[in-house]
View (cartoon, rainbow, N blue to C red):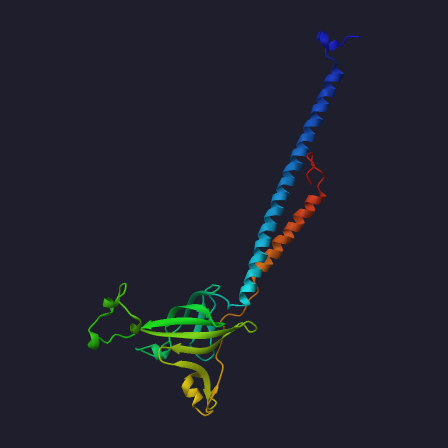
Length: 259
């Protein structure tokens, strides 16, 4: 029996059936494409939130490990009742430091100016090294300040130089001044007749016969220690990652077998 289509005769029922099959196939393909797009988007969001959350938590752990051995960087540490302050830049073995010029090294006043120096680790302590240019005695050498500017124009004798040795107490997050060393003396904290603690020459403290007692000079953080925002961001992004992962698990299998 011959097929009528071979003679150019079309059957209406067959044409309608083919049209319905094409519409169903097109709808199926559209749904499959939408599913693939949704799966791809969820995969991307899950990966990005996991990455950002992991980086934030890693940064938090690194910062906490750093604070076990070093003071908080770029944070001012102050002494009650005094203008002395310290601030250390970030570093593992050394870095930049900031402090206050003591009155002993200020030829024109009582000190109190900001001074920039460096810090390094030495014998388990933090050694902060500073220097300040000495006041020029023009009657003695006749030089002007601008004549000292330039490579090799100055020498160590043209500066007041001193080093403060600090101990870091991680339990209280404070810095304790152990001693100050300059070209002439070594100074240590002491207290006399119930007064306020201050620095005395180490030789004088030993020879005081007990009138000057050893004391502590502790520098505390100027701002209160705050909760780290990195840990909250990390937890938030990881929670979002978990939500995207759960949404992926609820989706049906894709045609290629992806979840």
